[in-house]
Length: 261
Image 1: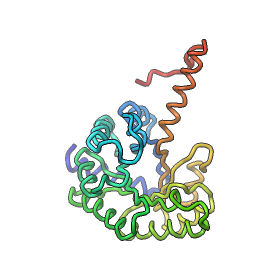
Image 2: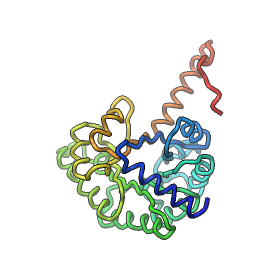
Image 3: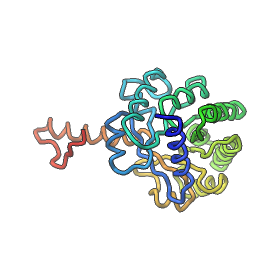
Image 4: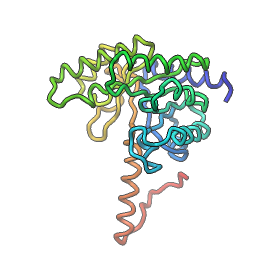
């Protein structure tokens, strides 16, 4: 991929976040899952670090070696013709260098977890990733993630939890991140509060099976992007386990199975 191609994909991905229509991403974890999702007309793809780690037998949380993680993402990038954003967790100890290596293999966006580290440290990590993009000549689309909600004390007043998510998210936006990811937001009023605090098309959330609002409603609330994290892999694995159970129980494979590989 040429430098111009890389820059064009980065610009396309950024434009998808700022467009009136919400960007919906069904996260992928290997080449065939990427190809299957891309074939639906997906405008961009996001990798799921949890799912990639699971595919190789590793627990989530930067337990998969970075080289192995990047190699799978490289294969995904080379297999599709749409922008790819990578979940590189907390940056493997060096967010700027990890972003640089991701950009080298064609990645044009990424998730970076703050893990509730001191805010100045988290902001510096955001700046390091954005600088890696500038050094490569692209507008890297950083989806700066705050864990203020998912790591909050269950006994903490909810308004304080949301206020902290807003405080950290605004700091990331001020540092140059185009969007902020706040996993754990599922209630309509909380999503509206955070979206209003960040501004139009600045908030991204995750879709949780059986809990989250439809993408059309999230769009009306001003959300820029909704992704699925490890849940798409769980959908696939649920179908596999159900089919295997039926088969081993004396039945047959589903008649509507399609030749997608």
